[in-house]
Image (cartoon, rainbow, N blue to C red; front, side):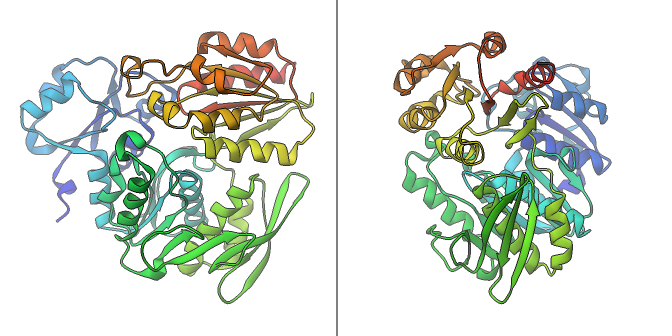
Length: 452
């Protein structure tokens, strides 16, 4: 029996995280009593509370916690939280306390799991796989690392035969999953605070790929060494599954999709960027192998709206363009800025970037500097620390990074002053980018540009 079925109460420590909130929604949709703690009230925690989930924002062991019985309560925590009084209480009183990845792994044990891994592209690809499953009316649940614009959520319950999960490499969490199908989009160096070097992160992805029982159900971007037989996918070059003949017409992207035995012409959608066609190619390969017909897949691709903060684009009547993106690695920033420069080569680009983590800023400083130098003007925000402390990274600051950026028009700002600085700039396209709390600028900026 699945041990998850033995619990009625589920307490989430760090419930506001994108991965944690999807799990909380799953148990809430299953009729369980869901509670949680987070240090900050956000749009996401407000939505969870509106869905009936009880959340506190103070590290206090109140009556709602002390009244819980360990026999019927499971505590789920994120490794991003290091020390917390609430977590200490549960551990001291011998509650069952599990990492988020372990719980997600237990769910995938009892489903046909489709897991999407990669240092870049996994959120878009897993969200697109989920969207295609929904449009094909497959019995599935999904656990995503971003907010689907179609679902307006990072979770959807449409049955239990399949699970679609974003397989997170951080803390080697993806090794807790039980994937029946898998995609590996990229194995670039990242999370070096966990892995140490590029070779170790590549080894982590090989260990993940080894979990898939069937070579024909493992789809890997062509050119990656994953240590075992698999099927390949690519864009603009032949592979087991590939897309080519990309062209743009009135803000729509057209492409042809090839399987080992046939070619399907004229897929069309509004999601820009060659990298996103690559993500679509992987998703289509999976769904084709689940015997979903191409007519359904074409319609589903056409009405895919994307993911919140993944190249979210607004074009205003005044001619201004505003793009907001979650990119927080040089490769991701290059992909976003490459798309901007491809489709709008003559537009003046203002970039507002918030680095995420002192360790990532340190490890990829030269890459960030090279990427950001492609802007016309840059506002660089303070580093968002997340789980890290500045005192452990002496000298790693935004001022230090800004010195490396080869750009005449560049300056640093704190988050609170950024909006005023933006309003003083001359630009055709504004790009806000980063994975911290830079998203708090989104609504004010969108409203201001609409009234210009």
